[in-house]
Image 1: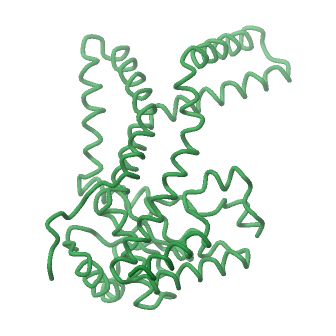
Image 2: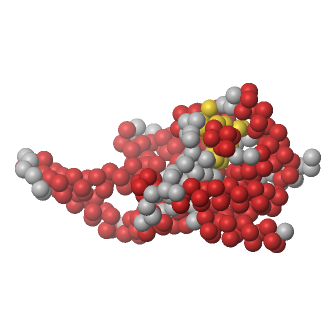
Image 3: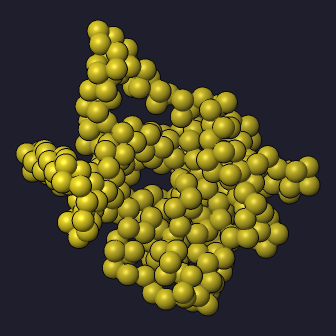
Length: 318
């Protein structure tokens, strides 16, 4: 086995993911700084430093395991599952020149064909994937997820999402406050309660108007991030094709496409890039209908026709 000198990298899509999260990071920094100085006068800087340093936990193995088990609902493989996965993983990593022992394989007890790459070292597949996919197809899925890791998609997305949490909470609170204020106007409540809600809403709207650029970025940010996420999927597909798994990956994509046409959600979320974001709008998928325009724009995955066309083109070039 020849190990590549450079085991990991960061491609353009991972860089853009981080840049698109920058406004949310700055908003989070302002919120954390303000709260730290209010709660710990004279020591507010310490809270800011701890928050900034907390991003490093994304690469801390024990923290990753907590993330996998409690946030992603993953578990360690059984001996039988390991016997199936380990040889395939060794083949995939050997073809790519990657040290496979750096990563950890996890299982999700799900009836959906799916796989994910998360944090710095997590590669997860669902139980049904082990049962339904052939060795070649499963290896192609693993190669796709490994592509997310070696190209920097997984860690850059997690890091951006982590630092965006304070801003996301604040944005959610503002939207709920506005809806609450509108609801107050439709029913009878105490005068002072209504006055307080209106006053707070006016202040929030004033700040949003004053910092309109930041507000606009937060509004359109999810659409831009979804567009970049779709690009990362194509990059990960290309990575699997370059390792020689193109035909098997195409077979998996055809299975996913057939399941979507039948209106099922069983394979719609397969090959989830860096988390559990489905490739199709869940409410629409449950009805067997078509995605809305917003669903398409917010989808983290390209449509299957695009992916299959790109895979076929890459295979032909090889």
